[in-house]
Image 1 (cartoon, rainbow, N blue to C red):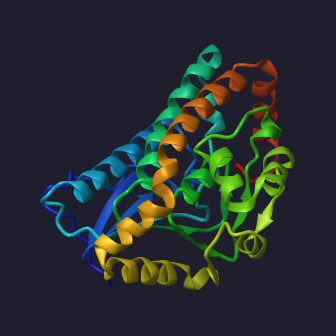
Image 2: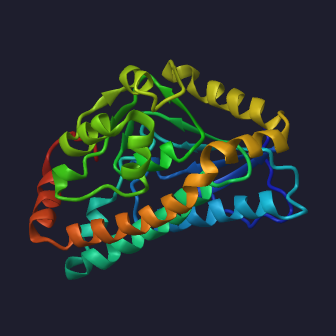
Amino acid sequence: MTVRTQPPSAPHTCPAAPVRIEWDRGLAHIVLSRGDTGNAFDLDLVTALRDAVEQVVRWTTEPDQGGLRAVLLRAEGRNFSVGGDLKSFLAQGEGTASYVRKVAETAHAAVLGLAGLHVPVVAEVQGAVAGGGVGLALAADLVVAGRSTRLRLAYTALGLTPDCGASWLLPRLVGERRALDLVLTNRVLDAAKAEAWGLYNRVVDDSALPAAAEELARDLASGHAYGLYQSKLLVRGAGLDELRDHLAYEAETIAAASSRSQAREAMQQFLTRPRNVHR
């Protein structure tokens, strides 16, 4: 069994926290740990995620960073993330729009932090990769997926609009035509199709997923840190300011969409359907 410890500068993390950080020999794991909810995005989870990413950013930019060389983003439970927590959205009543905006803006801080991190980031995804979980996964530099994954945006089915950078990342990864197909029709992509479209870098059997993602992340952690970071910056750096502006627009748009009665009705109907991708 791998023993993971945190560097002395790390805050204490409660085992019951919705997101935790694990540390092992230069590799940090950021773990979504609400598997019982499908790692749905409510304000508690995205706040913990933002704080975890900010901690990792500090470790990679401060002189006493403690040797952090790579990050593995993963999730407990059957699903990587089912996206927004619709129950928490609807529980706000007339305050839904302001709550959704706060959730989006907080999640966006995490997405931007991961995209600009000074070390390589690997995402390990399984089961449902939906809604905000899509943007979060694609913010990583590399994605390793289990064959069980089903990727679906699902926003427009609820009268909502994309967030977490999905509407910015997807056209750059798959092209405008395919991005529009995913956004407008809520098409479900299985793992093989997502890999063929360039959304995943590796697809492995579900049973092999943890080991495969760990191996890739650890290979990166053992590489030349300066070369890896500068190479990442050459590919991604010029777009980070554009992504920041786009995330602000996404947060504004999804908040406005969620204020409409039609969207609230669609979310309520979606929650009552048996066995859907969001629950």
